[in-house]
Image (tube, rainbow, N blue to C red; front, top):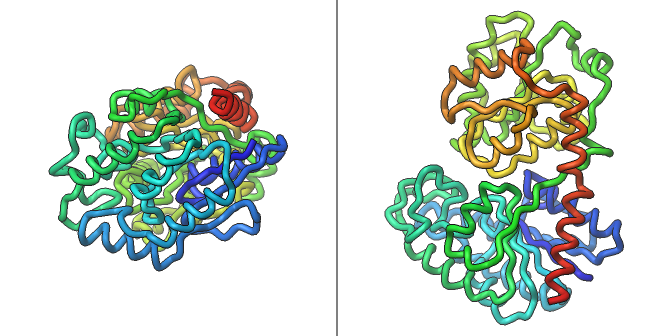
Length: 409
């Protein structure tokens, strides 16, 4: 069995980690696995191929911003992708993210429609069935016809030109010409949206994301790890991942406000990971807030999950967040907004959700967890549930079963 995955990134970001882990798990099971990806990483694996140049990515991003059309250039990367598909001749093509300025997805799908290769397409966001939006929030124009986009300046943003009607029509025409395609979503929430879209004609199923719960994301010994980072057992630690500070969807402003609001409590320590060049000056002045730059070191990240009493994810739109799973695997409960797939992720005592955008409720929920006033499961129970439901083995077996069923048809 020969599998080819295609995604924006490899080993970076939520979807990139899924692609990386699935690729390596498939190889361990003696399945021939290949990956094609667009940007932001250089791999030494001969079976992992980067198809886009930095110039192409920047050009498509520029055209998207100025003219409102994204994914309509990238001729060289798309031709390279087509040549690699012909060369590899996979039994299954497993698509992930086709946006991100690295691929002409309309031309790719026209090419794929002429192939007799089953397609598995994992939806990490809603881009496949909207005019352009990775997350449409409350807008439901995608159910009928995208146009006059109220989110034109959201990713992938345009400075004002609106081609969402054209892009919606082009996507619908190109994507629905595939004969053999199965839509996979990591969350039941995304599956329900896919079923209501123009891609609902295809089989839509849910396969939850999996993470490495044995080799990377496992609970470290608390007192030793806390001492390593300068904390004591008396400290109550809040962890937040602030990568994407300028992205509205990530809700980082709520994390900043939380840090400010709770800084009066001397025993509450806040760790904010992922800050790059833009840091609120008031945050810098707080002694109980630690700013940690973006880290690719997964063991270090697991350390921070392990020493924390609560992980806060303030996203205003989310599918099935891998950072939530990573926190659970290290025994740390989660507090977030009731959006997308988050409520299902934290149900049954794994965490708490509050109304989206409600800062006061978010603060109260965090304090409730810190003060042990909520009826959440203990650390060991959270870990065991995550191991059984969201391990790499569980996810990989589900995808292999799907691949086999499609090949046998």
